[in-house]
Length: 107
Image 1 (cartoon, one colour):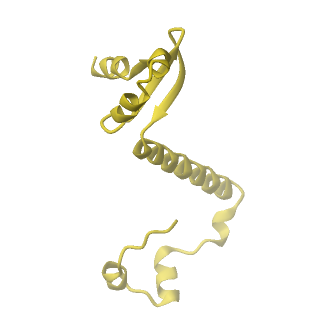
Image 2 (cartoon, rainbow, N blue to C red):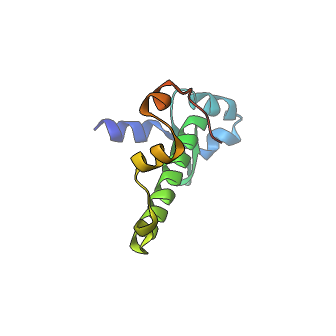
C-alpha cells in the first residue's frame, strides 16, 4: 500500500507547469526521488532528482559491466585470469597496504 501511495504522491499534471509552478515542482525533488508528469491523465515524462539519476546511472553501469564479464567468461576469458592473491604478490602489495591506503575517487 505504501508503494501505491508513493506513486500517487509523485504524480503531477503538465498543467502545473503551464500555470508557472515549475519552481514548486523542482523544489519537491529535494525530498522525492522522482516525479511522474501526466499529460491528458497519462504518464508522459519522469523527472528525477540528481541523486536518483546518479544512482540509476551507476546501476546501469554495473549491469553493463556484469554483462561484459559474463560474455568474457562465456568466450573462455577465464583461461587468462589471475587470482586476486597472485596479482597482489606480483605487484608486491599486502593486505595491510590495501587497508592503509586512502580512498580514491575514479571518474
